[in-house]
Image (cartoon, rainbow, N blue to C red; front, side, top):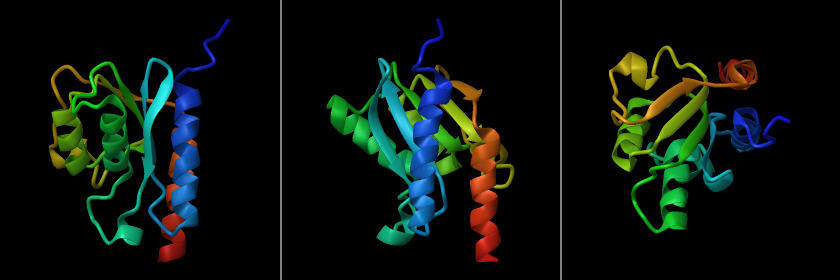
Length: 146
């Protein structure tokens, strides 16, 4: 029997948050942080609403997860995010010592891999499910803005 709490399950939760961001006029990126099959932090982009360039989905989720745990390190946690993190978010994830990152869509222009960002040496990085859906909502969002 397949585990109902697999990568697709949690990435779907992140994609739901991306849709929420889209509805608010934000770049549609969503993120959830999971520990022991429980979402302990989540977020979506809020940069426009908060007038804050640091209000990315990952940053929101990191803050919520750290508050939930009462600790600054996110060891034994997994981040599911609909878009490859930027170098700012990769830096925050580095310092959080998160164990695993699963992202859906690659960001070939501003992703941390392209920009030369780094993750903690113990962090496992994986390209995960729902890449097509994540890419589609981003393309739709930006095509409406241009």
